[in-house]
Image (cartoon, rainbow, N blue to C red):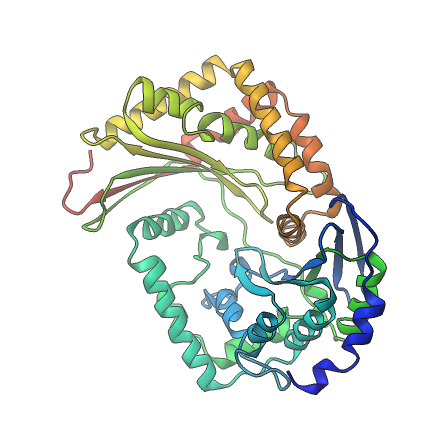
Length: 449
């Protein structure tokens, strides 16, 4: 590690962090630095460790038109070095401290994190602040990493029929909104990315006024503030950073359907995704009701509505599921999946699924099932307090998706306030075939019927 990065670190470790006794991760503080960087501190003094995360409010849905994949591409480039830290030395330095690090990209954010001993927090801030503004990019480096991304796409998407189906279905779901663009990017657009594209993206979005710092673990708010002001505070913000204005999706007036055939398919699958409301600041009730709906319909492999009806009673499927995650800046989706039993035609299986949904909308919710799920969700929220990494991710994801600290803190009680009537109202609104994409994945040459 270069001497410039180690200067005064031991002093900062001593004055910035203190052991203040045992406590659970219930204490959350937030503040904003003068340069616009938002900071969230989650205290948990049960172990002398810390999770340090920097979240940028830029993801695949914020990319310039024709440059799909550049947000994910830049996640890779951020490990390629600065004048102070050479290529690969960032992760090597974290590992040398006994820690771990990684990064990930979604449609609404890009995040970088390290898990280290609490007295190494200053070093993490030093290095992360360094690459926020001082990354060194060359044509050769960009070209080499572009080939890595293309190979990654080949391994994760192009060779996986299920991943290809999901990609096609999402593109059909969002005709105008960039949520229809794959996070990894379209192959032909990845191949065209160059250093100038990367440099422009970096200079615009990798700035303190576009970032959220989340520090969780054996820290105090005052200690984190002092370190954040020392390391991130001097960084200059991007002037005139525009609001996150994205194209809106036109009303979906008819169901969209697609069939994908591939010789590599071992088992046919039916998926259906409905457009659904997202969690919004101060207005999370519908999202909470949809969380219950997903659990009721397909959250449990044996007791959910779809599992009981299609896997055990009618014996039409070997697997069913329902999914919803409303943490998104813009519209979300509510998903269903069904894997039919061998010998059951896809049309027969889909008709059976539709019949179960229609009966559910008619009969309503079993009170015992509702009470059980409410208890389970409550327990999940309590157990989540013991996972400091999970809490850090929860706050970072929320704050880069339009929510606030207050929204995250209110979410458990919003969930507990949901009634069966709320769930049925949300189901009636969302489970509308006219705003759905239904996709069949079949074996090559199989008759899709």
